[in-house]
Length: 226
Image 1 (cartoon, rainbow, N blue to C red):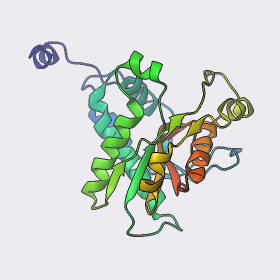
Image 2: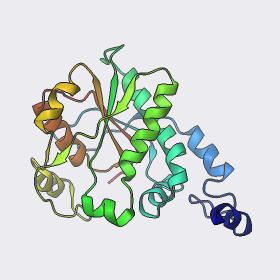
Image 3: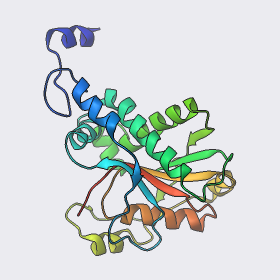
C-alpha cells in the first residue's frame, strides 16, 4: 500500500537515462519503439550457432534498462523489454526456412541458481514469459519451455574471450530426457537478454539438437559488439 504513495512523493527516475518519468520515460520508450529487429550474428560466430536476431545494440539507454531489470529488480520493465524480445522473435520466425503453423516454444537460457537467489528472480525467464504473452496477442501459439539444465559447473564468463567462453561452456548444458518428446513438432527459438560471443547460445543449441529438437533461431533483446 505504501509503494504507490512513495511513487507519488518520490517519483523514480527513468532507468534508461536517469531523467524524470521512471521507470521508462517517454523519450527512452520512443527510442525503443524505433528499434528494428534484424540478423546480428556475433563475429566470428561459434560453431553450431543458429541464426541470431537482436532488436538493438547493447548500448544506453537499452543497456541501462536491461541492467535495471536484471540486477536491480525493476520488474515493471519486463513488459516493454519483453515486447522488444517478441518483435525479435517475430523477425526470426519470418526468416526462411521457418515452418509456418507450428506452435512456437521460447527456450530461455538458464540462469545460475546463485544468481537467481541473489537477484530474487530469473530475469531471462521473466522476459521470455512477457514476450510469449505478446506473441499470443499476435495470434501465435506460443509457450515458454525452460528445458535447459546445467550439466556441470562452469566458471564465471565475465572477462573471458570468445575461445575461452567456448571451452568453459563445452557440454555444460543438457535437456533432461523427460522433455525430449514435448519439444518435437514445435518451432524452437532460443531467447536471452544479450548476445555477446554467442558461445552460450551455441552450447544451448547443441543440447537441443542432441535432444532431437534443433532450434530454428536465437532471439535476444540486444547484441554486444566485441
